[in-house]
Structures are given as C-alpha cells and as structure tokens.
Amino acid sequence: MSRIAYVNGRYVPHAQARVHIDDRGYQFGDGIYEVCAVRGGHMIDNGPHLDRLERSLREMAMAMPMSRAALECVMRETIRRNLVRDGIVYLQMTRGVAPRDHAFPKHPKTQIVVTARNAKPHAAAMVEDGVKAIVQPDIRWGRCDIKTISLLPNCIAKQAARVAGAYEAILVDENGVVTEGSSSNAWIVTQDGKLVTRPPSNDILNGITRLEIIRIAKALGLAFEERAFTLDEMRRAREAFVTSASSFAMPVTQLDEAPIANGKPGTLALRLRAAYLAHMDQQAGAA
Ligand code: PDD
Image (cartoon, rainbow, N blue to C red; front, side, top):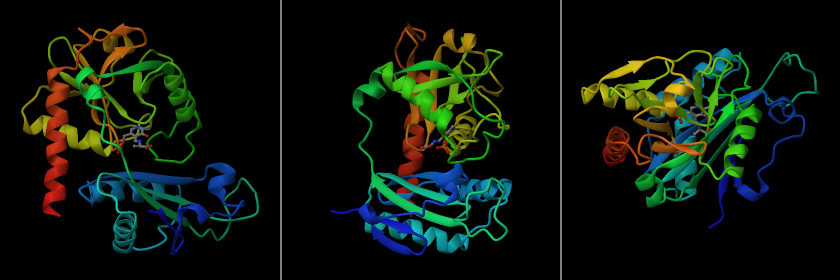
C-alpha cells in the first residue's frame, strides 16, 4: 500500500509530498509539531495534544490554519487513508513560505503537513529487560516547553545514544540536574519508593503521556513528587523509566555502563506501563 500525506489542503502520495525551499520550517526550523499515538485506529489523548499544539502556536505567534474540528477530521482521515491501526499520527505546522529573512514575514500563512504510519510493537525484550540510556549534556535553548521542529540538539543526543547501543539519551543541565530524555520525559522511583518527575517549566516539554501517568499514579494512590532530580539520584534510584507517545512508559535499567538498581525493570514502571496501555485500549474501545 502506498502512503498518503496531507499537505496544505490536499491528500497526496507520500513519495510526491513537497514543501517549498523557502518554507521557514526548512530555512529556520520555524515551526511546531505534535505526535499522537494511534491505537486500534483511534487517536489517543488528541484533546490534550491539540491543547498543547495551540499553546505552541500562541507562544510562537503563529496562526492556526483551520478550525480545531477540521484539523481533527484531517488527522482521522490521514489515519484512515494510511490504514493505521497501532502507530502514530504526525502533525507539523510552519510559519510558511517567504523570502529568507530572519524576522517574521508580514503576512505569514501557516503551512500544514499531516502524516500517519503504523509502528512495530515494542519488542518483548525491551519491556522484560528494560532499555539502556546514556547521559548527554542538555545543550538546548531556553524554551523547551514549545514543541518546536528545531530539534538539532535532540537529534545529536539521540544519535549518541544510537552509537552507544542505547534507546534514549538522558539530558543533564550544567548543575547535574536531569531535564528530560531527548524525545521523552524522565522519571525515577527513589529508594524510599517515591515516584518523581520534573515539574513543567521552560526547561522541559510537558509530555501528554507524562500528564496521563501522573493522573494514573494519583488514582492508584502512589507516593508521587513533582520535583527536579539530579543525575546522581537517577544513578542511585530504585527504578527509572521514560514516557512519550511512542514509548508509553519504558523501563530504563542501564545508565551509561552501570545498571540501575538490580538491572531489572521496576515494579512501578511495569505497573504504570500496564495501566497506560489499558488507558489507550479503553480510549480506542470507547471511540
Ligand atoms: N517526543 N520531551 C521531549 C523532548 C519530546 O520530544 C517528547 C515527545 C516528550 C514526551 O511528550 P509526549 O508524552 O507528549 O509524547 C518529552 C515525540 C514522541 C517525538 O518527538 O517523536
């Protein structure tokens, strides 16, 4: 089956989908995006994802190119045309096409691209054994709360992880404090059993999976603290895991060359993963 992309009002074969070389996304990384999980053909948590999209647009002084209802229709139709059951829908908006000039164009026209694809299920071993992460310096800018397509520092960190045979790079600031993963939020369970993740700020992306896992943890009555934690604490943690729309909750059992705790996925990480999968299945079933 050939893939279909939505590009500025038209559904086109993926191989022929094009944007102009003067698109500010191409020239400057001047745009924003969202990634929404798809389960059983249905978007998961699309409401909060579109809330965050609208926030990113506002923070970038960009206009929504269509109504939210129309956008949801396009996302659904892209999922349908690509026969996506379990995977992701990707949505990108840029400030549009204009002669190259750093300052914003006077009359920008937001450009939009939507794609969707199936994703392979996580290999059983990743969940049963956990994954390796490496530590990388956080060299990003001061507005990591905006889901911008300017992802070069994230790409550099992820590539370092790939080279090291690791799944994720954990980003650490100049004070030795963990910010987040290169494309995920970071969590630990302390030695006294407290679930900890960093509060939202300009230093991290406020993950939609993160918000749902917090809701689940509270509903389960788990001891939970929203605060920054150091790399040292993460190395000494009882458990660690990362969350995102594509990882769900993924246990991290090795950091650089050392195991975390006994090197096996933690009970809370697995419990939260199971609860998150149930949350997705429930939304897919109810839709
Ligand atoms: N990444 N932090 C960063 C830097 C991210 O890029 C992501 C998501 C997250 C988790 O956010 P959410 O739970 O809403 O997926 C945190 C997506 C999956 C990506 O870039 O592909």
